Length: 181
Image 1 (cartoon, one colour):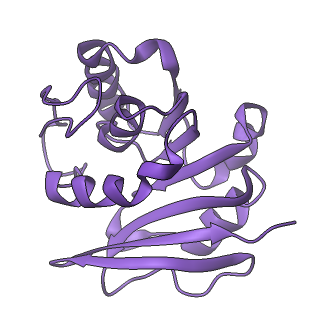
Image 2 (cartoon, one colour):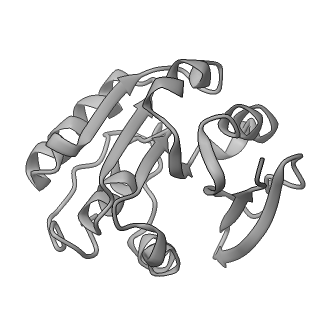
């Protein structure tokens, strides 16, 4: 796994040993960040269920101003910190060990964010709770990028509008926009 483009483009990222963390494939990240490119410069980003940090690191590498990485697993956070060190992007990152979705309240001080990257475990993606809590953290018209198994989409959620959905094999990415107000 590597950073696709930007200041850290081409650098290798470590992965978490075992099967507990599922990194986003390079081709999915490449396609996703091509769609997000206009929103990245100077953006404040929230990477929830960050794992290795590949999504947030890609955002930072492509010009996001700051990224808050959140994960509850110590092994994943150790790999994430090493990946930030290797890419020299740690000065624009905050790394928090929090369990989601219950920890969303604690993230209010860092916002508002323009972009949230969500990659929860496919089997138990708590979309309703995540998106309800995330509404308070994002600016109006902010985007939530939801990676999920194609069979378990976030569905219609109050206060959110579907912008785009893309499929990559069994993986889908749904981009939702926070409705204004």
